[in-house]
Length: 287
Image (cartoon, rainbow, N blue to C red; front, side):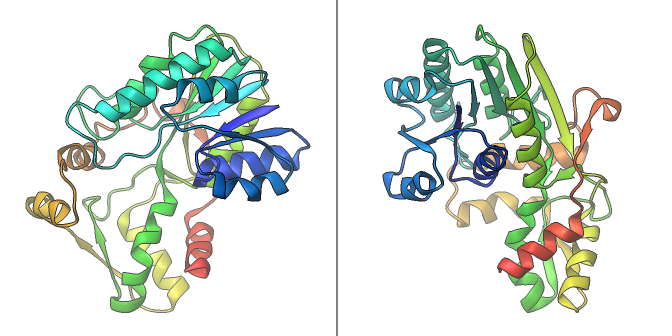
């Protein structure tokens, strides 16, 4: 039995489907009972648990061969990352009590960065879970190609996509969520000792210009990148409802300036097989 937290998300759901397809038993860990029926129908055991509910999480992770865990996404964290500290503490307590044989945890490229930014939340997660007694693997994927979903409507309607990644011709490590899920499902079924870090990107790096060109081909129209000036970011993010945009802005700075990168260099990075064009075509079809 494999416990999968975040099963209703992009990666968690794909991890669960990959395990089910290979004949494994899966326990779906989710907080919304209304979404449990879909996974029960697929044959999953169901465990209801919020990510800060230690007793419920402990029960969810007890008696399983391996657990897949991740943080709930928090794009507008409070100063000091109070909610992240609460989630990390709960996960750490629950896993220590439940003692699954091993843990696979979704982290991020740049989790080791010294400068505080939005991804510091994943650094906190790695530090919080890194002292657990069971083998644990931190999977650090690159920027998700699927983030481009937010740009499709603009590309269709105006022939432009706004970009916070700059300059527009700079390649950035990106990866498809299905490749992240495939690697996570494989790790869950492997055996190792101690702490392990697996860094992951796609077959080639991608620039905003590459995204525009690929969308243009798929949509049959010219698509251009419109860089969003750095000086406008804070006002823009606050107008969208963010209370604390600083960490998000510093994350973008980190990608643009190059200090959010893989810790172990490119030679040791695992490569996924999904290319940008096929991922974008699927996103356009869904849209």
